Amino acid sequence: MFLKKQLPLLVAMFMGTMMIIQFFIPHPFSKNVYSTILDWLMIVTAFTLLIAVQSTVQMHITKIRRKVTDWQSSVIVLTALGITVFVGILGGAYAPTNILMKIFPNVQPGSDTPLMYLYIYFQTPMQATIFSLLAFYMASAAFRAFRARSFDATMLLITASIVTIGRVPIGQFFYANMPEVVEWILNYPSMAAQRGILIGVNLGMIATSLKIILGIERGYLGGGK
Amino acid sequence: MKKMLITLFLFLITMSVVFAETDNTLIPVIADSSDLIIDEFNYCGIESIEVKDAPNDDGTALLIRWEKIKDVEEFDGTYSLYRINVETGKERRIKELITNETEYTDQGLYRNIAYKYYIVAVNNDFQISTVRVYTEEITTTPNWFKKDKIILLLMIIVYILMIVLLVHTVRKGKKLFLRRLAGIDALDEAVGRATEMGKPILYIPGISTMSDIATIASLNILGPVAKKVAEYESRIIVPNRDPIVMTVAKEIVKEAFTEAGKPDAYDDNDVFFLTDSQFGYAAAVNGIMVREKPATNLLLGMFYAESLLLAEMGNTIGAIQIAGTDAVTQLPFFITSCDYTLIGEELYAASAYLSNEPVLMGSIKAQDYMKAIIICFMILFLTVFLTNGIINLFTDADIGFFDGIMNVIRFVFNT
Image (cartoon, rainbow over the protein chains, first blue to last red):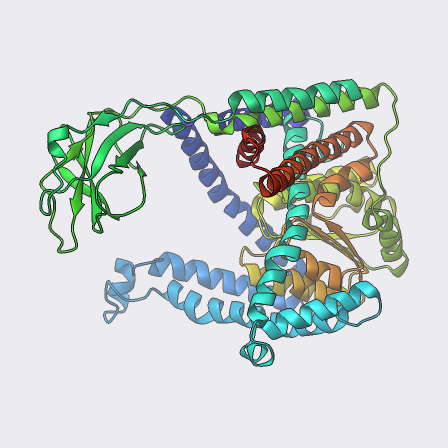
């Protein structure tokens, strides 16, 4: 029980208090402590990647074994993972390895590595494809949001129409000061509402942090109490 | 209780006045009057230049201030500021084209090394004046406390006291009123619906790391949600983008199932890591939505551009969606596409509502009181600002007192 509940609470309390104190001390000693903790964080993060790989492999192997619906996708995931690891270890990340240059004599020290090739010509286009879907989703969401069913929705429709028209060159054609009107809407009414939310968010953040440091909030440890 | 809060409020104001930044008086190094030759080629025009250690830093910055001679004819050239490393004797121009500025903070210096500064005038023909005005030698000194953050420290102390006080009050049996949150109230219904339909619940804890408070708030909500799911003998799927978040989420869900008396119903493969690529994660979660057709989607935590991709897909499959984030830019997308949205701080309050623990309720009340204090400061500033403006408009009365109050409030907000 001590190892599972009290010890994590004590660690959270000690580290939380230390980091608050550290924030108020600009001395190099304090900065060194902070950078050391950041180093620890990086080391811990590097190790957690192994957990991520373990989780992925375990889940997909289980899916293949149980022959769940679309288990073939799991084979593709594991194959892609294996190829990427193999290519990364054999060919290097940023510069080609000596082994790669021996196997393929035309590969020069300044050439792209196979891993980079995979990143630039596979991963980046795939990410861009998903990102581009946002435009279509945005159109469908806007269509739903801008239906003038109530007073609030009508206000939203009018404001959004002004901002949309003011953001494109044709807006200036209709009314010369349209960009200024849009800037005013964004900088004053919109910003005021955002800041209202942000004050609450920041207080919530501080409260949550303090609750964790004081040991009042323990939900993140599991079990709730 | 009220007396205590009023005392705290007054204490905060008193400390603000005490610690409000006052201009440190410096002893200027007056340039030798023989240097002040008003000549086309030997122009100086600088009356004094002074250097002091920059406050609230780690000992790597110096603050240089200078004053121009006021009663000389207009000089339309510029000035250049030079630094001399006294140990090596090396000189370096650190700021040029100075016209109206009167101070400069020289950063990135070495500790325990003496520095000296001087200013020269540069005329429009790029001729450098031979007259130079030097400062004294100085070494940087690291500080042990950020004086400019004193109000922040005081506010944290006041905040902690408030939380402790209110938690103590609640423990003594006092009931506090808290506004209900529709999104949280709908949670039971959402879990029940999923159970009836025989479909899983998809819980997305955002795409940020454990160092993000929104993620911690989301994981605090995951516990009670997973417990409800376990009680209903339903299934919860938690895809993660961060390995640390995944580890914590696994532990939380496992504990919740055990607490509900259904440890066998927990499947370790339901809480898993997907990918750390933002849009890769969005694509994978959308795939899960299409294949598994969850009856309820909970999107709670920190979201970026993928928020609409996830929420719209959830909308398309007809799931009940409860979202919550403190990312102001993503809130409109969630409000549009989800049935319920926890806006900003409601995300942080949700775990207290769900757990129904009086101690946590007390901390939410403390949040409200803190907000009241901030609003009081804002109203005070606005009142003084408007009164000042009106008096200035109609009378010539000396109203330095109002300026003083406004400076104090400005100092409070700046820190």
